[in-house]
Length: 155
Image (cartoon, rainbow, N blue to C red):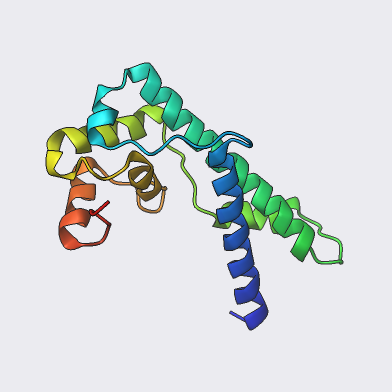
């Protein structure tokens, strides 16, 4: 990977992080604090669905916006013959994704907090970030990550 490609990758990652942070903030509103396991387990199924759905919508919007910005910054001047080769489409394919149903994520979080009460201090937003397609796992898988020190457990 060339230095220019590394710099471009770093910039796209930075843009994604900033855009996603703003998406979480909801514009002028301040984001609500992340929920721990006790709070999560006390929510209704409808509220859990709303929270996870809003997170996934915000993440996707941030990813699309960041990739469009990357396209504006790094698009080559020569014509592209196949739209899938454009900078924004390559960025979308490369960026982390969430492709499961909302209920899948709700199930993993609820199962984790139910089975492992000693880890109810871990915020739901931290856990959902672990569940991107490249790392998606079960509650038991998250627990194993915690035991091995692969994820934070002190909050």
